[in-house]
Length: 330
Image 1: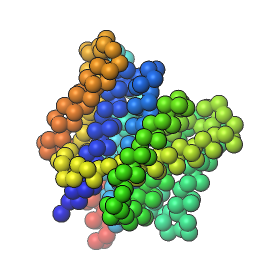
Image 2 (image 1 turned 60 degrees about the horizontal axis):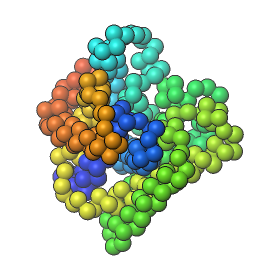
Image 3 (image 1 turned 180 degrees about the vertical axis):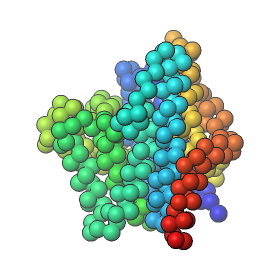
């Protein structure tokens, strides 16, 4: 039986992902209002999503999970650039790029492969959460481009996956049981809004994709800022789970089918961004992006899209399962 509270939380998060991408494409970070809205969204949505991914990860399925995400990553790494090339006329097919630079939203699929593998082994070591935090901070010290292979994002968000896997159920149960968690969550969310508005924080800190040198800060400043961002995101994750209690069992279909919404909404955003220009005031543009996100989520939550992805994954899943079964029985 599915956890309706978890599905409701996932529904909020996937909507924030889609809405955030519409805001980025149609408005951008330049406007103070959109910068604040995007900043709050980016502080919370992916850390919370990755936390849930860790919570749902089962040790016995670690290899199967890696193959599943690889089976989707490879075709979509081809499909997204090909789809974009329909308008730009430029398609640079390079086998090396399949892993060197994941296309836009596909970094999450690569992250899932690495987080699954790392967590499987990290939990066998002492202090796995502390180790993941150290990796999140130390990756910023690396001399190479943290955007390549999505190494920056993968390691920066690793602690959320590890914590979700090891302590996720306890944390969510505590939030549900605590009487005043919703009120506290609301104040935390307002605090994050005030923080983003007053600091006008560079969005690349929230992406987690660049090193301290690329962000042009000292090692000390970079480490402190990143640690601060991780702390704020952690509070934001708890806040969003507290507030999701308010919607109870609503939107559980969307929460149950987040993967097709996550992968396929990129095509919708790309398509509309080439044909739709929002030459209105900022308030109306934000509202239109909100409506587009709602409509996109409603369409892509349909079961047929989930089945489509499952069917697509079989090109690699089936032969791998046969080889694995053959190896075990031989």
